[in-house]
Length: 141
Image 1 (cartoon, rainbow, N blue to C red):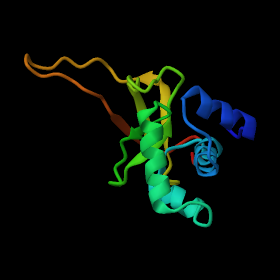
Image 2 (tube, one colour):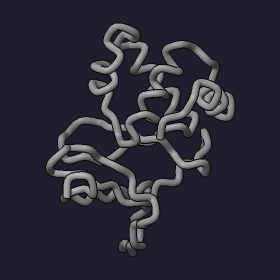
Image 3 (cartoon, rainbow, N blue to C red):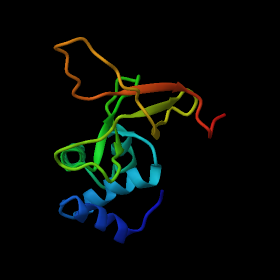
Image 4 (cartoon, helix red, strand yellow):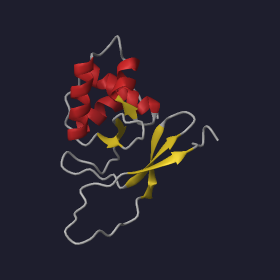
C-alpha cells in the first residue's frame, strides 16, 4: 500500500503524533512494504536518514499511540506492523493471525482470520493473544 505524503501526514495527525522528517520516513516504510518490519529492517532502509535511537523512539511512540503493534515471529526479532483503525493509545485490537513465509521470510497480518476463543482455568487472565502460522505466502506459492 503505497501512499502519498499528504496521507502520511494525515495518519500522524490522526494519531496525535507531531510530524517530523524521520517519523514520516519510518511510517513510509510500513506503508510501502505492507508487511511487518523489525528495527534492523528500518535501520537498513533508512541508514542515511535516521539513526538507531531515533528509530527506536519513533517505534515506541507509534506503539504507544496505537499506530503499530508488535508481531510474533519465530526469528526472535521484534517486529512491528501497522494497526487497523480500531486501535488507540489506550487499547490495541490484534486478535488476528500473523503469517510468516518460509521462503521470503515476510510476516504479515491476516486480519480477517481471528484467533479462536480459548478458555483458561480459573484464575488465569489473558492480556493479549498472538498466533503465528508458518508456511508459504501467496507471492511465493
